[in-house]
Length: 149
Image (cartoon, rainbow, N blue to C red; front, side, top):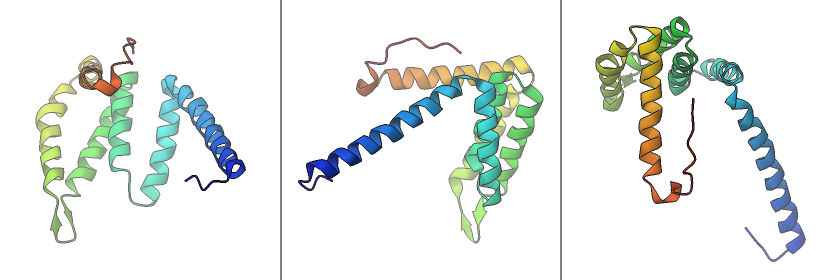
């Protein structure tokens, strides 16, 4: 927060701008799906060491389907389903939404994993639905540029 010290504030603002620039440079590398996959796999390894990695496994599965790495995507998706199934209970606490998500995945996503093409189409359709959703929001109206996969 600003405390009246212009020099200290300018130094902090410059620091944050430099950090933001570094992040932008890093994020731009993710347009290369091979790079994105390497980074996600590395992140997943770190998450699993601390017994986390729930969504990371799902995201990696979806990226594999998008890259048309079908068999690897199925392995990650099945791994995600197992992690999800094993996490309905944390101790004695039942987590209902996890079972509901598991059932949704089994009923709606899993049947679309019949082939490389159907898995790829499933992910493309998910992306398109999210784009439509966000483009309807006032804060995203300025982002009218069309994106392609």
